[in-house]
Image (cartoon, rainbow, N blue to C red; front, side):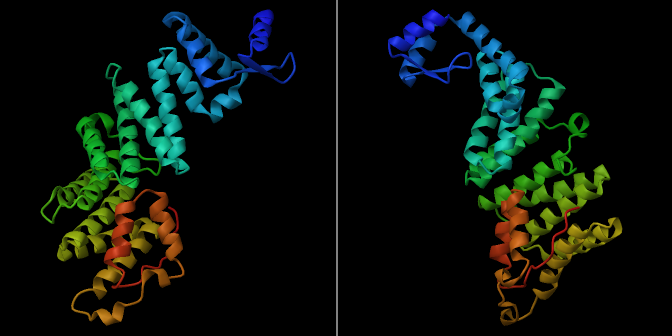
Length: 325
């Protein structure tokens, strides 16, 4: 092995970094590397990738933990598809968490593509739903609302309440309700009207949230429904749901939801029949505007944030200190 490496270095095809015995080697050009890689037959190539993956986990566990995409690539090439799908999904979620949307969407797409080749199991279906939601959110945030809706639709098509009811978001909300709420905002931004799927999704989300008996899920669904009814001009229902949201948050001792519900309710109460000159103060005049903006944008709730800044800019100040529940 050592003599073969020396010959390659002498021929100018490899570079040696660091001195022996800790040396590493680099090809002098990517095309040379590709040519060498293509000379390998399929089975030996898979075996090499499997050995690299095993070595990474056994001897370089810190690198494998920090870079799941590196391990995912070798598992993919080794034909370890289910394992690779999980690693690509993990890498994608990490990328999205640090706002690397382009990188994250590509990694999650790889995970979804590989899951599609595997036999359907309850575990894989649950993982697919979570990845479809993350993928749709990322597409919507990058402006691909049509693509986002397509993947919300896909997730809802495979979501089975009986099978996937236990699935929860990281903050403890029902995934099915989350999906409907997310899609309601997405389709409204695509231009749907008051009688559209948008309002139907929001109403169904509230209905399903009530059936879960889970307070946080219901408060979340009510907030999205309130936003949707305001966008569609359905103010009477909006008012009822704002009151319910505030009352439920008060009952559960949830300061964040109570604060946000109260501020939206103030905007509602000040809206009807009042001269607009009373509400010329921009939301950006609020000392807490930055906190409110960061809260919505960090959580990917772009539909709500766009509505807050556009629709209520001349109605009332939405300044509230947000407390995480």
